[in-house]
Image 1 (cartoon, rainbow, N blue to C red):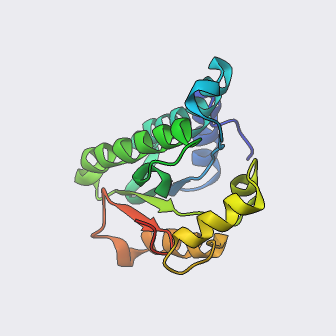
Image 2 (image 1 turned 135 degrees about the horizontal axis):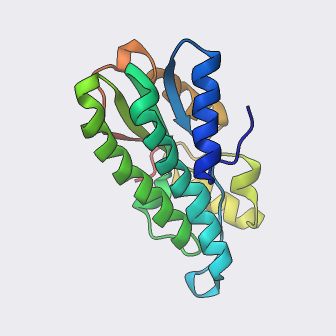
Length: 186
C-alpha cells in the first residue's frame, strides 16, 4: 500500500489497513527519505520543512503507531546516515534529520524493550543510488567513494543484508544501536 509517510493520518490508515490484512505486524523498516544537498544559508523554509517532514516526522509517526500495533518481539529498523558522524558541507539539514532519527530510535528501543521489541538504526555511507548522485559532480562522487576504507560506493544490497540481519531472530539481543554500514568511513 503506497502512502505519504509524512502525513500522520495516512500513516495511521496504513497501520490500520496492514493490521486488517495480516494477522500481526512483526517488522517495521523506515527507509523513506529525501536528500537536500545545499549549504544551510541557501535552504528555503519550504525545503527545510519538507526534509523534516519526510526524514524525521515520518519516523516519529510510524514509531507512534508501532508502539501499539507492532507485535511483541517485533523488529524496527530506521535508516539514518553516516553523514551524522561527519561535518560535510551541504549536508546540514539532512544530517540533522538523520541524527534526530538516531536519538528517537534509542528512546523507542528503551520504551519497547519490555515487550521484547528491538529498534536500531542502520547508517549507510555513500550508496550508489539516484538519491545519492543527485546534485553531485563526478568529482564529488569520486571523493565520497575514496572516504571509505574499501574505496568504493556501497551498493543497496550491502545495506539490505544488514537490515535483514537486524530483523532476524539472530539479532534479538541488539537494540538501541546505530550500525554503520559504510565501508569504513568514521
